[in-house]
Amino acid sequence: FYYERTLRSSADVVPDEKGAAFRRLVTGEQKTGDGMAKPYGVAVQAGKLYVADTVRKEVLLFDQAGQRFRGIGSDDPGALGMPLGLDLDAQGNLYVADGLLRRVMVYDSGGKYLRAVGIDQLKYRPSGVAVDPAGSRVYVVETGELSGEGHRVRVFDARGGMHLFDIGKRGSGPGEFNLPRDLALAPNGELYVVDGGNFRVQVFAPDGNYLREFGSVGQQSGQFSRPKEIAVDRQGRLYVVD
Image (cartoon, rainbow, N blue to C red; front, top):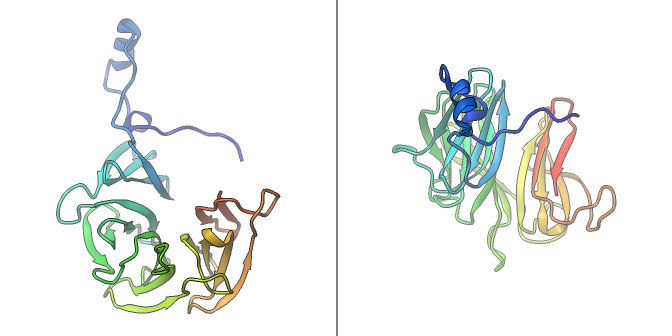
């Protein structure tokens, strides 16, 4: 792993206008662009980087190969309230967990709004979303409330929006959650869920059956203090933000 670049605004991907570099050299002005306000979630596919911005209330697309920048979800239909977790299916459709509207918003690869999943069924701040490559099943984390409500993963049919089943409830035992934050699907279909309040990552089969877990509270290697987000690469290696 080595440092490659930093992305802050449209200026990092959109090419300069003709003569702009010379003008800055003469005037001393800085290169500026349309930037992020409060980034939260991130997803990437085929050189396109998607960033959920909770203050701008949209998902920002940094297309490095295409040298373009745009916002997704700023207009109706499909306007976002508080975009949090992101994921993409194999067709490039974007799934956005909206913590304010309490639903998953779906857009095509061009940013066009398609549909919403979980309307009137996600009640406790959906914060993370994962979709299988075929775009047929959506897994949504409901972080939950301190009162004990929520703290589960809800599973929906991605196309029809039908609620299929839930995984977990409030608790500390196998298959139970305390303030879950994020989740990711591995290439073999296993589901990894960041169980933040229990300082661990739990692993489930696609049908929701508990398989195993790893991690504990602490500051040593393999332990967690405040685990937040998770991602899986093509080889099945896990990356957990703590």
